[in-house]
Image (tube, rainbow, N blue to C red; front, side):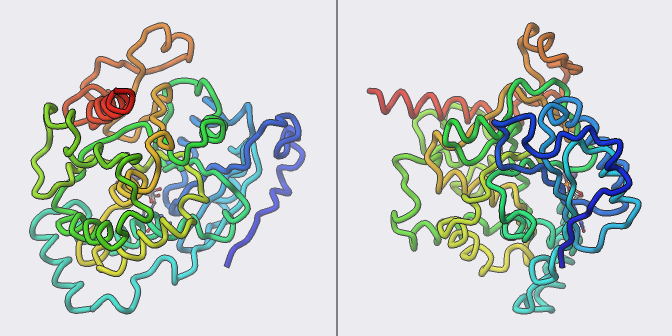
Length: 360
Ligand code: GDP
Ligand code: MN
């Protein structure tokens, strides 16, 4: 189901920096884009931006995934845009399509209800496939098996400043497993029973994989001493709806492939909420990482300026912006980091609060 494309027509114009030759410290990593053929121009925009801001100096491979075969035009144009090697994978139907144990009638009823309630993407089957795939299957694709790290890229995103470091290297050196840039509140009507499923999982796990004294449970709930002073979005459960905006992610594939994460995912998946509701991969990844990783294994990349419309992050320090050739305005209302609808305040408070408590 998967093919590696040999960019033969381009072998003459590529600069010859094939994986790792000029950069001995290059990490075992790939840039990763799940994308549709129709999104080619957006894919090229994102690639051009990331190549300019980062990858031209590293030539990491690009991996493209799709639930239908990529067209020759898509393959040629993206290979021409890449400084590194490119490869293209077809996602097997078992990893993408609605499993047959999801009940037809119930599913249709739930979708119609979500459509009536104006839930975002509430009536989309393909969006649900995508969210479940990103939650539980992307890291098991054949093309990713030999990599340790991935950097998720979507069409039509942009990077407003030069990356000041190789984020893969930062993860490896700090023994971290997950890195994010933007954190927001989820729309509760997409995940009415997600937290019930998580709570049940936590009880069943019984402290084996979820270790409350070392994880970021306090960030996603307001159970910590510090969270309760911050403004929040109304929530009907203990989950405060904070999640890492997963359209940007730099992570360790081995974490997602671990028995711990898979147990967590399988528990959620068995509830059917990816289809009966519209659970997003962002809260699923975020809750998984916050429960299963040690706090120091999650990194906020505060010097990576990233835009996925409508929001972006932009460094507030002027000299940082100059140094990194930034093209962004940190005062703009869509510059999200210090706005009330960003979860970063909770992140900062929680991190410092935890460390303060530990030292005390
Ligand atoms: P949003 O960011 O939540 O509004 O969702 P997007 O439309 O950006 O989709 C998220 C990611 O999944 C993007 O990289 C899309 O290109 C990709 N995607 C969404 N639906 C499909 C699909 O049906 N097929 C494929 N191949 N990719 C998809
Ligand atoms: Mn998107």
